[in-house]
Length: 341
Ligand code: SER
Image (cartoon, rainbow, N blue to C red):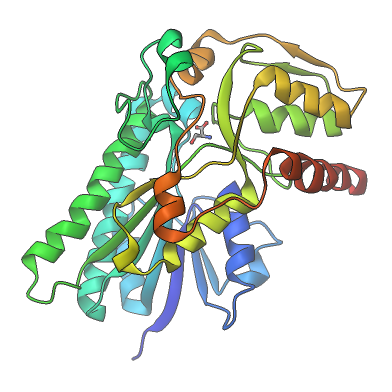
């Protein structure tokens, strides 16, 4: 029985998953995509995927049966519980975010052994992996490189930082053990800033105030922003997030000088974000009601991050700077989305 060559996407029904499925399915030749999520896949995604499996990344029996059926050439492991969500049940978040990732890394290693070449493993890490100690340090800091401030304050951030290390471990462990050094896992990770999609609304994240503000304004709903006006973090439009994952997946191995790369586009304060939203939707009613816990989280995230290594090593640059992101992607697409609805 021959195994079918596929790309596996976990957490495929999330925001990044939708964008990734759309882009991958536009490639020629069109790859076969198998998706795994604890929820059903959105109807719009269904025709684009070979098979959707409703299942849990903690189900190791389910994962091991995938190897029997599929020749998995790449894994995009997107499944995770986000930062705010994880604080309500940190141990459950640890199981999903860490044990789930080990399960997928093990699957990749097994698959690499069968294929005789490493499986590309694309992993989204996060600005939550940082922990800037004080607001003074945040204000004084230069754009943070990948190695700055490695003291995350949330369970999600700890999980992401640790899984970055696990990915490196799985890559080098097999390179050292194997007589054929190419067998094993080829782990590649991008650290995302806050992501903003025009077509989906996030849930359970702490950078969600940006997208929530926009989507509320477009629906004519009032919005109480859960962070202070001066709160500044980097953001990126969803098409650029997908672009970065695909670019890194395609980068020649010899170009990579590290396994974890920052990517970003623009930084702005919550007040500036609200201002841009009000320019587009003059009736928008946006107030500021900081939530102590969520404010505490974003206060430890750097105001800007340095993505020069990604630019140098694999030619990264975002297509959407702040003007294009708002004027050509977010505002028109969101407006259309709710007009149609
Ligand atoms: N957007 C994510 C969150 O807020 C960060 O990766 O949890």
